[in-house]
Length: 223
Ligand code: DX5
Ligand code: ZN
Image (cartoon, rainbow, N blue to C red):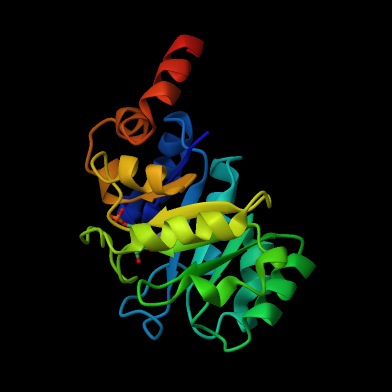
């Protein structure tokens, strides 16, 4: 089953609680939270206080994507605020293995994200610590950018590296109804979408449009 993780980066920040409730009602699987520090990426967004404030608005997992460097000093704060999955960038902090150990010690699911220019091989020796791999299909920092097709090959390689380990393969950036089938075909099983979900008037329709046809039929039959 393909999971959909709408990114609240494209939500109305003046009504974030309401937006998160609307995503929940629209059938999202995760709520993707983009954390940016103005240093690792050229933008500033969401701190732990905002996540804590949003936590009562849904029981869906918070998929927290940390685009911050360093991340290690803030892992506990994001865990305590209500993150369920905490993803750090392979390029941040220098000691990726330690970051993953810290996330697991906090009792959270551990993810690693790879920028477009970062090779798949960077995760080879930490695979057994991972619950999720996040492939960036844009350079992180902003919503609404164009999908980078060269990442499809990396998604295929990572799918092969994962083998039968219980690791989710998530794709983030420029995912819409046109690019979703490409990343699914390459092996992704969690799709992040910001502008594709929030540009539509009806979030349930936008979320459903990202799922494969067979899954849409099953969902329609069950509803
Ligand atoms: C980019 C963020 C993404 C972003 C995706 O730095 O990590 O999650 O919100 O936005 P879209 O789907 O509009 O490319
Ligand atoms: Zn993201």
